[in-house]
Every structure is written in C-alpha cells, then in structure tokens.
Amino acid sequence: MSLIPSFFGGRRSNIFDPFSLDLWDPFEGFPISTNVPSSAREISAFANAKIDWKETPEAHTFKVDIPGIKKEEVKVEVEEGRILQISGERSREQEEKNDQWHRMERSSGKFLRRFRLPENAKTGEIKAAMENGVLTVTVPKEEEKKKSEVKAIDISG
Image 1: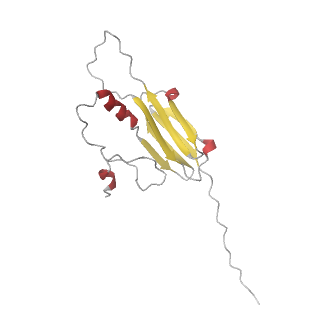
Image 2 (image 1 turned 90 degrees about the vertical axis):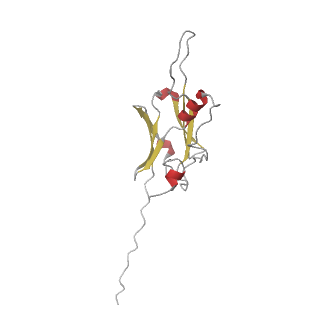
Image 3 (image 1 turned 180 degrees about the vertical axis):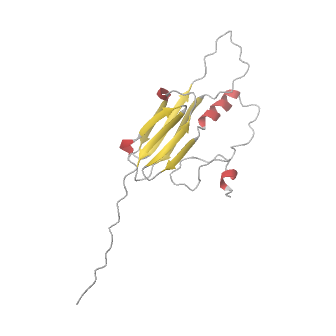
C-alpha cells in the first residue's frame, strides 16, 4: 500500500510521472474558511475536472468527467507540438429577478488541464468524442521500431 495517494489528497496522479503537469496543492482537503463565497467554492470544484490517462500498446487514452457540458463548450488542443490541453466552461444559470434559490450545488466555471505527451504520440491523429458527460481523447502512438535480431553465424573450416 502506497502512502503517496493518501498523503496527496487521494489523487490518482503520480508526482514522479514526467508526463503529468499537475501541481500539488498543499492545502487540498483542508476545510474552506467561512468567509469564502459559495461561488468560489463551486468554481474550484469544477476547475478540478477528474481525468484518467491510460496507455495501451496502440494509444494514450484520456477520459474526462465533465457532466452537463456540451461538446461545443469543450476545447481539445495541442500546444507547442506535444502539450495536450483540455479546457472548457460551464456557465451559471441566469437568475431571474423573482426567482428564489433554495440550494445551488452544481459546479460552474472554467477548467483547464495540460498533459505533456510522450515522444511517440501521433499528435496529428488525435480523436475526441463526448458521450454521457465523459470526454474521451485518443492519441495514437507510433509503432515501435523492431530491434534487428543478431544472428550468430557458425564459422566452418
């Protein structure tokens, strides 16, 4: 059992992963003080969109939980050749003058996550799809070059 995930707030990212650009927040998990407005808490909750990154022999797959967001509100971009950037925004509902809110728990605001892709990523062939509030980004990998076999030759004579 590793102490790293529980020490760093239960996150599944690895601080030793050279591809992760996540920053560790030393105050993550601490109670929020009472003088912070609820809108700031909602924005911070949405800003931490949960992302899984899986590598298979064929591709790198990113799955992002962003329920309630339309695909038009999400951007998937590649910057500087190998930085995958996933961003989006969920707007707050318009408040009418006569409306009385009893509870507002759904998150709103912007999110932005960046990942440094490895050298073998085919950045020109990235595909993205949104289904049931989950964005799936697939980055194909270049085929590994097979090592030439060294064959011993018997010397006769």
